[in-house]
Image (cartoon, rainbow, N blue to C red; front, side, top):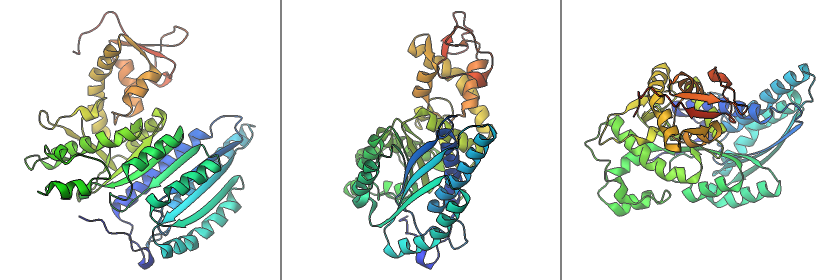
Length: 409
């Protein structure tokens, strides 16, 4: 399958995978703003957003695209924050947001300007604490990225989000993802990858053609050999997920390898790149609140990508209650094993840093598994013992008890 670009000038159709992506993007971005503006005495937050494949802003059904979603969420969330702060007698916060909107087609950018103008005007009326700096461009994202990066650097924006909702899978080089993630400590990427294009070209007999197709990922064609036709659809998905993830994970400390769960087949990945385990933790929670929107095939505990399709059967993790129950069972074994590998204790902060690139589990399930495990105890920095899962803090220490149940190996 070769992905076709949206026909924005003729009225683009909002496809199911885009609808699911937008829902997750909207809810995550709201949590992002809430977390970044939570300090009681904070009065300002500065943010840069680059929408590299912005489109025209609205679909033919009237639903908003990502540029409008960003502005709507900014205004609504900032009003929510300031209403709460005012009720508590705290100073309100102002958000200054630089929004770079790019699309390859100049006529699409002109249409975007028309569609977004009333949204910008409305945000000024309804949210006076929001300062928007909106700039438009037209061209290939790869060609324009240095200009975007320079603009952000010159504006001294330290909090950065890139939304790279490409139509296909070859428009963003892996080296560019590397550069973005190394540009600042507080940078995140949402990245769409057309997984079905990968499926289509894996069975080609010409290794040079395969290499050309995937040169943006720098994957050796020989590494595709184990994805043979004997694997079932789900097993193949797990193997493909691990293969590509092994390369994407080199771009950032935390990379989500989840795919959009499409009943008509696996078509797209919606990946999230971050440098903070807290960002990944929040993203996992959002996925659980949107069960069945995304999925992962493999293990559900701490080492989700340790699944080997040649030696074990995996399962589809749909972020629903059944998946959470399965995760809890694996977590009861996985957590003490990890701590044992570390010695006999680990700080909660280091524990989070070591797990959140390899687990789809909800943070509440992880905390409860720690608390319920007869071989573990959580101690505060003052030497007290935690009794409730929701009270665990990053500065706590997770210990293996001296007397153990030996229910794990």
